[in-house]
Length: 224
Picture: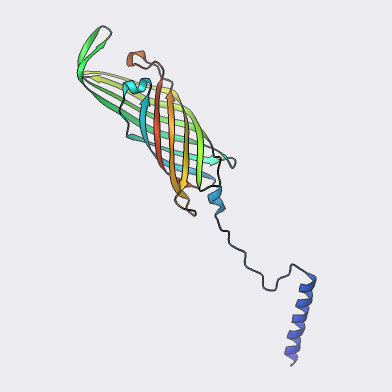
């Protein structure tokens, strides 16, 4: 009987305290779990592994008209605001075309043979990006890159071979989109198109306005 009275007194005391404190809960509710991952909506950045498909324009298309299936790039991006990211890129591209046997004229003479033209480059750039919809599962973006590029330009006709290697400067605007593989996924596809312009002039090889080519970007993107 005494234990019962003590228990009853404790319950009355707790009830009185609860009546005076509107925020008091005898059995507090568990915190509700967020329905989404805030890190997904606003990531710290992206790391992309990209396959690049290239096709020349302008003077470069006259030098190599074939589509390039040899290209890849790695890039990382860090958000400095909700909409703006900065980062860097490393990329490699290779172009090649074999022309039919015929007579090719040049200053002072002509050569008959099979013509092969080859172009390779290794590019490094500092990039900036703008994301208008950073909280969407589909994140479109526009970007711009600047940096140095090391390139090799080859021309071979029969046994005659000319090669030039040098450093140049390039710029590359681009537009693309990140598409997550699911609402809770930190992995997605990076799809885009990039225009590359290299400040290179060589009238002997037909480059009077630099080297220009587009790239289709097909990448695997990881948010962090």
